Length: 212
Image (cartoon, rainbow, N blue to C red; front, side, top):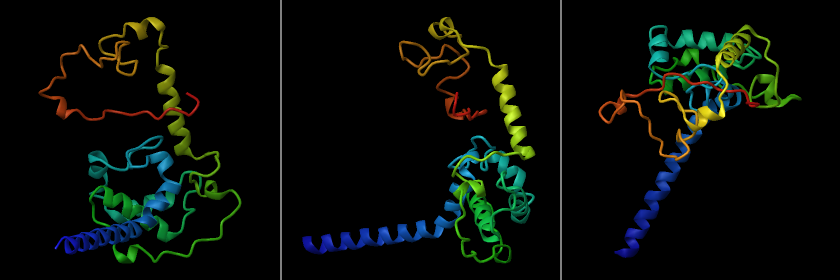
């Protein structure tokens, strides 16, 4: 009986591994394309970084009425910023379906998602020429300029942090990890408490340049 249980357990684990591998293989085309062309701006988990988030309530509220075809049109005509329209039709369909799935929205119809094209031969310069995570590229498109200008304006409006501010931070500020030198992580503010802390949400994020 003991040996029989061990065999059954081994078969169950093997089935689980095969199922997981099959699921990962099925999901890999869109995820690979996203990692190469989108993640550096929109975040690994589509939560936004240098570019806006591609998930969440606000995103879904905006795109649910427009539908998958409208999303595909925008992505294929404007992305990646360094080379709009530079990917093949199948890759754009995979990227669109990845975003739709993340937001639990209906995927593209079969007619809108063409068969995956055979990858083109690699060109000198690698992923950078497709706007991915290869060698750095210079983005001269209007969207990139607008994003950089907005970030520069935010950084310019920030007041310099002094040593005195770090040692004795204002009650409504959090300048240090764990806030104060004692590492307690305590905030003297009263509006947030044990009764409403579970309702907190991210208000905004700012992806800083690598040099900062």
